[in-house]
Length: 256
Image (cartoon, rainbow, N blue to C red; front, side, top):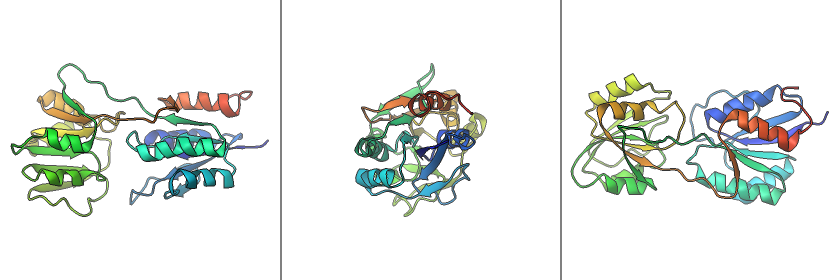
């Protein structure tokens, strides 16, 4: 039986679960690609490739050289550059492509959200008066907040922020989720947080801070996501497996 070569662009819990589901299938030969930005990534259930491709042309060349039959974009909802490149590269390589992207969070009664389109816009929304700000946006874009040095920042990330933020009052927390609601309430209270800046990444692992903010009546500046147009998108691993079966193995039952 020939195996379908599948490249999963990963870095999310969903990508790891999808790779695990495909690992035991006799009709699939999956490879998981990671950006390589995390210093100590989790172990994965399939072969892993780490590092960038050199844009859409580099990714297309890799897909052709390695004879992949399908590309699945299961990157973080805010990894828009690689998502754009994935769509272009798949078209260049002449193979199907779809995205696995978990649903965004939706505001609930009691939430005090201000939606913004970018981290730079979130900086402006903070205003001029000094505030104690919990930054839960990862480490890649925290440098934007150097434009508002009047605020005190509590910054949580998986890896260290390098270089540190060039503002007078910062506190760094290195931690990996999931983060529960009660623990988040304690953290927000202990640091006397006035406002949270978060990305609408969806999922349950980091939702604790959103639920905690609701209970504490804290405002949240929510950076909304953008997904590339023109790519078919599913929201769960089960949906991804069903679509994969339709694309590469329409006559086979899952798991055979």
